[in-house]
Figure (spheres, rainbow, N blue to C red):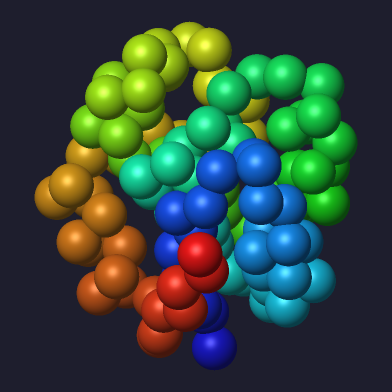
Amino acid sequence: MKKLHLLNSSPRHTEPLQQCLRLMGDQDGIVLMEDGVLWAKRTPINQTFFERVTTDQKLYAVSADLSARGIASNDCLEKVTVINYEEFVNLTINYAGTHSWS
């Protein structure tokens, strides 16, 4: 059963992301939103956290939240797919369930 994980905590609080990554299933996805989009920025530390994410697992970031924090799409990690709100809603419909991490 594919699950969509919603992460809104900033890199100052690593525990929610660490727990999320430990519990991710093979075909789960993570949506980075609110302050969670700070994880999407291309940095060595962020890259290290997401090394475990496989090609079958998906990593998304909400474009409006990126813009609000001054992060351009081309400054994101390669594994990150930038999505708008409509695409976010479609993801919540297409995954079997959601889990919020904060």
